[in-house]
Picture 1 (cartoon, helix red, strand yellow):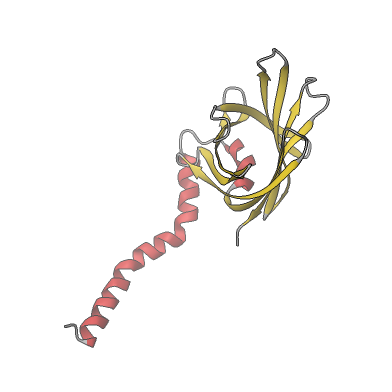
Picture 2: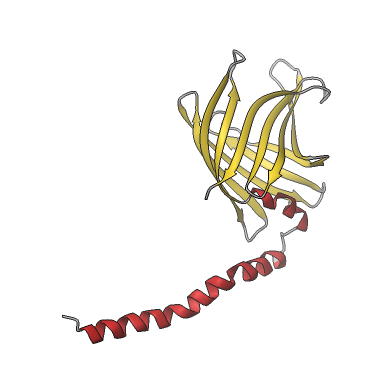
Length: 193
């Protein structure tokens, strides 16, 4: 049986042992920033995507085949990975009453000087490599496609309306080399409190 004095002594010892960890945790952002900047694969251009980081609630609107829209909600976690060399997103929600998941990786290609997004989802299952850059008020990532019937499409993911606590994303399709676009998915990300 522990006496009150022994318990108090044990508690003080635990607190004393934790103090270096607490101090380290308080200094982690600066230390992590220094580590990220020193990482060989880090490129400052990736900071264009820093607004994506966080835990988000997502309001989704998806265009269905009949031209109707389905409104659902999802959650998303976007964080730095590989010592800050890329960002990863895991989104979980539903689509047509089925679970729907997205895995996305964002990076900067030092050769092409373009931002990249590799995306896959539980609906399609393929890896799609988008490349992009800032385009006026939007950050756009494009994926050129040739459909089964031989038609050429561009699939675009556009990030816009960025605030400290939110941003919007649209998936757009073009069949005329980008002259006109049809929006097929709308998403509004709001930072969880």
